[in-house]
Every structure is written in C-alpha cells, then in structure tokens.
Length: 238
Length: 238
DNA sequence: AATATGTATTGATATATATCATGTTTTTCG
DNA sequence: CGAAAAACATGATATATATCAATACATATT
Image 1 (cartoon, chains in turn orange, cyan, yellow, red):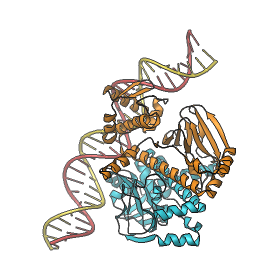
Image 2 (image 1 turned 60 degrees about the vertical axis):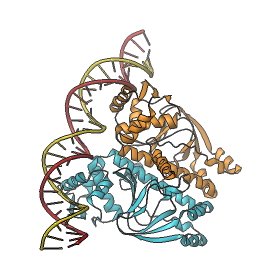
Image 3 (image 1 turned 90 degrees about the vertical axis):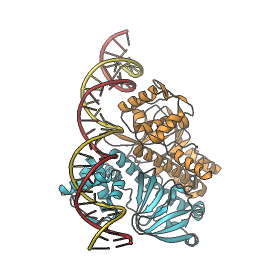
Image 4 (image 1 turned 90 degrees about the horizontal axis):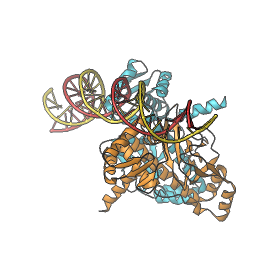
C-alpha cells in the first residue's frame, strides 16, 4: 500500500546524524555571469583535522561549501558542546546568516578530518539571491531540508535512549557518510560520544556490548556493521 | 564594551520557547497584484483550543499564518511528543514544505487556545517566491530566524537541566508571549511539562518549589513572576 | 445532586546515565 | 628512543528524572 510506504519514508528520515541523501546542486540555476561573479568572490581553503572554520559569536562574512572532508556544526557553552549537525562533502554550511537579522554565527564549525572548503563572500551570495529567484528557491529548499534533518536529530537526541542513538549514528555513518558496511571512523571516542549526545565512557561500554552481541565489529577506528537488521530494531526500540 | 554586549545578546537569544521578538513582515514586499493573488488563494479558518491544524505525514497544501492565537509544532511518536516550537500571533508556520523535495508535513501543528488562522495555497506561495526575489529573501530571513530559534530550543532542552528549562519557559512566556509579569496560562500542567520536556509530576513539584522560594506566584492557571533576576540565574546555572 | 472523568498533587521507588576513580594502551614530540 | 600526554577502557558510585501508586480536586454528564 502506498500509505504505508509514505510512513516508512517519513520515519526513515528521522535520524541523529543530520546527513541528507542528496547533494547540493543549487549552483546549476546560476547564469554564466553569476557563476563568474561567485567564483571571483570565492576562496578555496584547506583545513587540517580538528581545525575551526568559524567561531560562534563572530561576524559571518562567508558562506561555506564543503568540497572535501567532513564538518561539524555545534553550539558551545562552558565545557559542553551540542552538535547541531554534521556536513559531508558537496554541501553548504553557514546559510543561517543570510537575511536573519543578525549577521553573527550562532554556532561554531570545525573539521573532523582534513577538508577542502570554498568560502563564498556572503554579500555577493545575498546579491545573487536578490536577483535570481530560482536560486533563491533552491536555497529555500536547502534550508528546509537542513531544517528537517535538524528536527530529526532533535527528535532522536531527546526521545531515543542511548543505545538507540548509538545504533542510529552507526547506521548513519555506514549508510549516509561512508556508504559501506565497513569503514574507518576518523573520530575519537570522545567525538563519537558527542555526536551521540552521551559521555565517552558510556559510548565505549555500549560499543563493547554491541560487539559482544556480534552486531558490530570494532578494531580501533575500524568499524564494521555485522547485523543491520538488529541495529535498526535497536534504533527504533532502544 | 561592544564585545560583551554582543555576547549577551547571543546568549539571550538561546531560549527554550522558540519565540522571536519580531513579527513577520514579509508581505510588505509583495506588489499590489501579488497581494491580491495571495488574498484570493487564502482562506481564514477559526480553530478551537486543542484542535489539530495539520497532521504529520499528510500532504502540505497550505502555508499557515497565525492571525490570533497560539500554535504548537510537534513531532509525534508512539505516546510521546516532541514540541519543536510554538508559534505566536503574526507568524508563519509550515514553511518547511516549500521546495524541500518532500511535500509531506514532518510535524503536526495544533492550537493551544482558540485561534484564527489564514491558510495560503502553497503553490501560489511558491509561484510568488519564484517571481519576487525580495519576497524570497524575506522568506529566507524568516526560515533562518526560525532555525536559530529551534537551535536555541534544541540547546536548552538537551543541555540545561529541568529547573533551568522551567525557569526559561516561564521567562519566555512572560517576556515574549504575554509581555506581562502576570498572566493566565491556558495550558494544562501536562502541556506545560511537554513544553519543558519533562513529566507532568516533575513540573508540578518544581513549580511548587519555585513558589516556596517566592520566585513565582501561582494560583491555578494564573502565574506571576516575582523574582526575574533569580529566575534568570536559574536559567543560566540550573 | 450524584456519579463519572479528567486534571492536579504528593510521595515512594526505579533506572538510565553521568560522574568519579583508576589503570592501560596508544600517540606525540623533544 | 623515552617521557609526557592523550585516548581508550572498565568498574564503583552518585544523581537527576522518570515511573508507579494513591489521593484530592475540578469539571462535565445524566
């Protein structure tokens, strides 16, 4: 039945990792002149692992496009941080400073792994939006899918309990980021814990438990999903 | 110093209730013809308290504008629900279905109190965005401030503990919704608890404690903030 | 007015998860 | 290399908050 499949799609979209399945293709709606204008006002920068791309509280002067790598967007308080979303290759970040009345970043962005990033002048970006309604529509579409992703993470972090969140993140990493059952995760246990919204100690204990139950295999940073079905069940129920 | 005040503004924006201080004024950028077109494709509907305006999983056919009343936007699972945001008068809702690739509501919207709502045909809305870049820019601005508000709620719900969340909600209700120290809150304790992301029993216990410490006064649905400073302190530290 | 039905309140108990303490392994770098 | 510093791991304990149970109060219904 069609109704059932709609429902499935909807629940499947709810995930902790905030990574959509499609890539950003808004630049296709630019005219050649606009493309040139944008290129002239774009710089490409290489970042090492763990470097800060922009800092919460500073003025937003650029829109960020991830050519290569993996970013995290997070809010910082005293010692804790809340990861709002992670941004994989071929996606935009920092769009929230467009026309929002405040031109200050409400979050920080940093790299998980060495990354290549294009930084586009925000005023030029704004100007093109103001003159190209198709481009503006595309940006609205991107903002909206970001929003929906963030709602999903919000839901997961607040409603699921820790095994469910961990199972979810592992599935997301496998299915959406690496697109493989086996992957090298270049994150420390601490970073993985932050992504799951729990403590480092707990993530380690839980990984061990999942390994003991033969749902995953881990060897240092090498992860392998052994039992997708069971992990999905834990995501939904645990 | 300017830097300090920027910082204050930034932290002040982080709140649990998701209500911005400014009202939506995007319709000012419409041409007279567009205004007429929009009006012709808008219906005004009156809702009672607790009625559902739109249901998660259904097709989004309208953009919602709150003329009068108070709405909640929430995701439903089995028995729990996560309140994503609350929408006061003179604000738009349901914008996330514009160009997001999926035209299905990822959340439900219902009224807290009797409300008057304008429902604008989503296709007409899309068409106007596609032809009026200024309007599109305004919508991007609204989406972005919504997003920033939602990040704030996400942060509050996940990082603060329950007294901080309750203090925050009480302050928000007083400062942003009712704009008075004393107000009649037409929500049940259960609804207030959901808004704070905790159980009904706990919200009652905590209200009692705040009353015992003379920070608030409560008599049924009548709330009065007695000590704003102390509540702010609890919001930041508790 | 009396019964029923939901809402509000209070207390006792359970539990998921954080925190603390401590040891081991791996990585960094002078 | 060898020392210092991270990162990883595991167990014991603490705690915030949910859950459960039971009563009081308010509101609706016949």
